[in-house]
Each structure stands twice: as C-alpha cells, then as structure tokens.
Amino acid sequence: MASCSAKPPSSNLETTLSISDIPASVIAYAICPYLSSSDLLSWRSTCSLMLSIITGGGDDEEHRKKSSSSANGTITYAEEIWKIALQRDFQINVDQYGYQTLKWKPRKQLLPPEAVSVFGYKAQDSIRTASSAFDSWKHWKKASLTFFLRDEDTFTNNDEKEIENNCGSLHLHAPYYLRAAKLWSKIESWMECTERSANVGKLIQRTLKTGVTTNVGKRIQRALKPDVAHQGLLDNKSGTFAGYQAIQAVYAFYGGQDMDIGRVDTNSALFGGYEAYNMLSCSFFISPELCLPRANNSLEDDAKIRIASTFPNNTKNFYVDCATGAVTVACVHLYPYPIVDRGLDSALIWFEEYATRLESGAIGVVPTRPLLAKSHSRHDPLHTIALYPQVTQNSRPSISNVNSIRIPVASRAVTKGVEVVASAVFTPDLIANNGIAYIYSIRIRLLSSTEEGYMSPAKRGFDYCQLATRHWRIQNDDTGEVDRVDGDGVIGMYPILVEGGYWENRNRFRGTFAYQSCSAPMKLGSFRGHLTFVPVTLTSRNYIYQSDNAQETEYKQESLTPPIVEQHHDLTFDVEVAPFILDSEPEFLY
Image 1 (cartoon, rainbow, N blue to C red):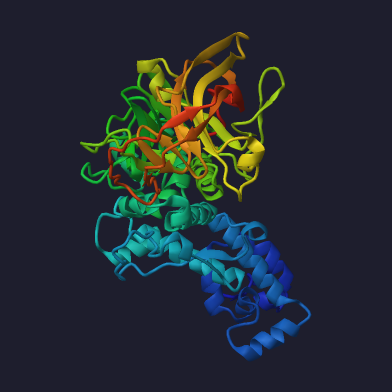
Image 2 (cartoon, rainbow, N blue to C red):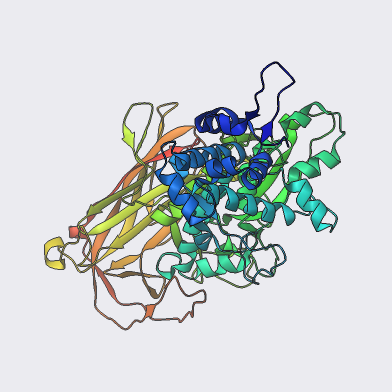
C-alpha cells in the first residue's frame, strides 16, 4: 500500500503533495469506491485523514464530536463509503435492506444439537440490525468467514490461517441469506404453532437436518475437465455457480430432511401432497444432490441440484439449474420442464411462496392415509400437509379461463347452512401411469352457530341431513366439451352431517367430511356442480364421537350400532359446489 503522503518527481517547484491537500469529498467519492475492501481497512488503521473519513471521525469520542460538527461532513462520507462497500461485496442495497445482518457463532464454538443454521442460530433468531454501514459490512464479512470456514467442499485441509487467507475474498450474497432466514422463520413459526400445524409441525421439525454449506461449484469443478467452456459460470464472489447461490442460502439454514425409512411417513413431508383412492404422493425436502452432466452435454443443459422428491418411489423430483437458477420438475415418462424461471433467485421465490402459503393458511393440515405404515385402514388416518388450495383472506386472485370468466383456484359456497369448499391440484406424476391430471378435493360440513353462513335448524328446516347424490360438470376449455358425472353418494359414502361433525360408516367424527377423486388430463378447464341432500331424523342417539383431532395420529375404532335414520325425501335440497379452476400450468407447483 502506498504511503499516505508522497513526494512528486524532482521539479523546479519546492512543493510536497500530501493526501491532506486533497479535499475529503474527492477522496470519499472519487477514490474510495475504487479501493478494495482490504485497502480501505488498511487506510482505516494507518492514515489519520482516512481514519476520519472512513470511520466518520475516528475511534475516540472527542474526535468523533469534532468531525460530526465539521463543515466537510465526514460522518456522511463514512456511511456512503461503507454503503458502497456493502453493495459491492455483499449486494446489499441499504435503501431496501437497511443494516440487517446475520448473527453468527465462531467456527470453534460448538453448535447446539438441535437443527440450526450453519451460523449457529434458528432462522427466527438469526437476523440483527447493525448500527452503521461499517458495522453491517463487518458483520457480513464475519458471517461470510463463518460460512466458508465450515465449507469442507471449499477447503479440505485444517490449516485455519491458510483457510482464512484463502476465503477472505469470498462473500455471501447477503440478500439471499436474509430472504432465506425470513422464509424459514415463517416455516419455523408454523411448525411451532399446534393450532395451525397440529402435530405435523413437530414431526417435520424432528426430521430437519442442521444447515449445510455444500458448495456444488467446487464439486462440479472437480468432476469436469478444467478447460470446459462453462467454467465462466462460476461467481467469483461466492466461489460457486451463479444459479446455485439462492438455493445454497436456503440450505444454510436446514440441510434437508432425514430420509431414514424407519422415521419417514406422509405426515412428515415438508412439501405435503395429495391422495385419491390408492394413489398417494408426498414430497420431501431432501439434502442437496448433485446431478452431473451426461457425456457430451453442456452444464447449461444438465448440471442440476435435486432438492425435493416423492418418497420412496421418486416419481416426482424438483431440481435447481446450476446455470440459470430455474426450478424444474421431472416426473416418470415426462420431460423436465421449468415451473419457476424468473432469474437466478428462482429457488428462493419458489420457497418463499410455499412458506407464505403455510403462514396464510392457503394450504393446511388434513387427515390422510400413511405412506409406509403397515396396518392402517381408511378410517385410521394420519395427517399431512395437503396441497389442495384453501379459501382464505390471503388467497391469490382468481384465474381467468379462455372465456374470460373469473374462476378461483378454490371455491366456497353455503346452501342452507351446508358449506362446500372445493379445489384441485395438478398431478403431473400421476399422468403417465394413471392418465390422471388432477385430484380434486371436496370438503363438506354443517356450519355451527359462530360461523359465517350459519342457519338455525328452525330456519334451514332440519337438524341433520344426509348426502344422497352428486352432480358434476367438468368443462374442457380447449375443446369446449363438458363431462357430466351423476351418481349416488361420493366414492361409496353417504355421510350424515351434524353441527360440528358427521356420521360415516358406523362412526361419528368431529370436523369436516372430505373426499378426493380425480379428473382426466386437460390443459385448462373448470369444475362445478351440486350435491343433493336429504334431511334426516336420528331416532336413536346411541353413538359416541370418533375424534379426528389433528393432534392425534392413532384412532381407536369401535363397532357401533348406527342411529336409526328416517329420511324426508319430500324436503330434498341441492347444495352448490361453486366453480374452481383446473390448470395444468399453475403459477407454482409443489
């Protein structure tokens, strides 16, 4: 580094040029932005004027007071200089992110046994706000060192001094890590709230692994020839491929789910799923799995990271493209196609949307059949995250079909106090083997007195009602054809609705009666119809509640004599199932 004062070549003028002769504003705005961070730190410690400019008045309080009151405004210079350094080194725009940084624990400090990020904290506890631009820059620098010092793929030896020298030029993409911390904070809050996640949140939390620093850029470099054309895709600041940085930030907080077959079941699938009849699909967040290019293929075409998969059959897999960052899905017999392709941060966008859906209640926990349990019946369900959209205040806007009619992703209708919530999910993993493109879910219940749309028994004209028939109209918007489905009951069931629950197959359950069925492939369409109910009188009440509390995973079944049912066919009425969309190109797919 050059001295802070310099003497020019000999001349007739007896002058000495000093850095002190250069206006502070010139140094702050014309020189400092072009200095490396290490030069700024050197100047900060060796040159009094630079100390004043870069620190905003020096380290002692008296000097700080003098500088803050001086006309040249050195404190402003200091903030601007380190704001520039934040933007240059860590991509932090202070106007957008302020001085937010990550908390971190030193490398030698043991991390707690529970799943935490590579920085040593849960996502909810990991963000702090620095006091100044320099304080923020300093903490991001230390967070970067913490991350890369724990990265065995970047450094394979144990010479800590050499490691620190080598990783001094590596920097985290700070906005990605802030966004990852916030999305995981939403998921953590959901998992800890039994009202929203029942026991499923705790089961998922138990499977999550500690965050990892896996650097696939280094793995790909070691696996490929050094002269391949796509080496230029490596990002110099992070030392990894540009398309991997966003998902790397996600994995820094949790390293996937433990896929030990003895512990895994549908109720612990982070990305939930869907079921109908004997078909079931649940997706898990897996440890980052590198998929290297095939022979003669370029990295742009083939190097991907597998981040999620159905288990144990792997019929649906999600990947992140190392070059572009796009999130793609691949199913059996279907060519991989992108589901989120909005730039290098596509993986973060995909995860953020899922966290928001959990937080808002747009998707929720429902009873479902277990995937691996050996002895369970249809009436002995566990619970899982269901991907069928729910009707919430935070639901996304409706989707327009080809006829410009607004069709929602989830619909709700109430007729005589009977509520029907309906929606469908696109199922690309079931198309090849079953010819099924959608699984739709119909949720039916008789509202209670505190709920919107409730009608008293006197006003609606009955105490209880039984489902008799179903009538569906499924429209294909590409062909204009309407498939008509009329039949008795639903999948062989004729539930009797009571306030707060229902009777079905000798047992009374609390909560909502729900069933799933499926629909054939179409690019875009809509589903609507109605259910016919018959008011009934239960002349015997010798029954017990069969609890379907979401916090219970085991059900005790008792054979009961069902109540004597007297049907009143002269009072039959239809209950609307409002239209909802069938879309093979949803904005997001999980």
